[in-house]
Image 1 (spheres, rainbow, N blue to C red):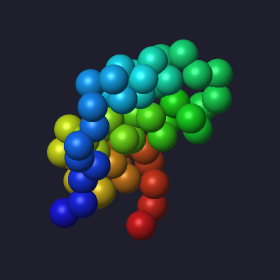
Image 2: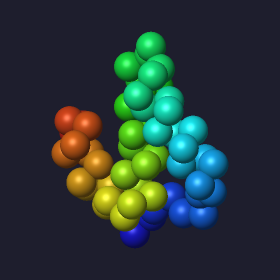
Image 3: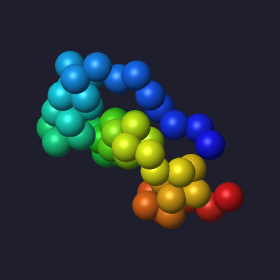
Image 4: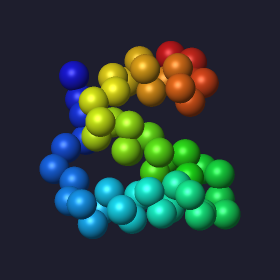
Length: 54
């Protein structure tokens, strides 16, 4: 499985801030997706969360 790994604490804080405060929906969604991938969510789980079709 593919996961995003090796993110620093600084990067995680930045992603969290982007997810909470960006005025652009797609930017917020991408930041959230990166965070979830880092936490170990599979691609199939991410697709379900973000309502994507395979």
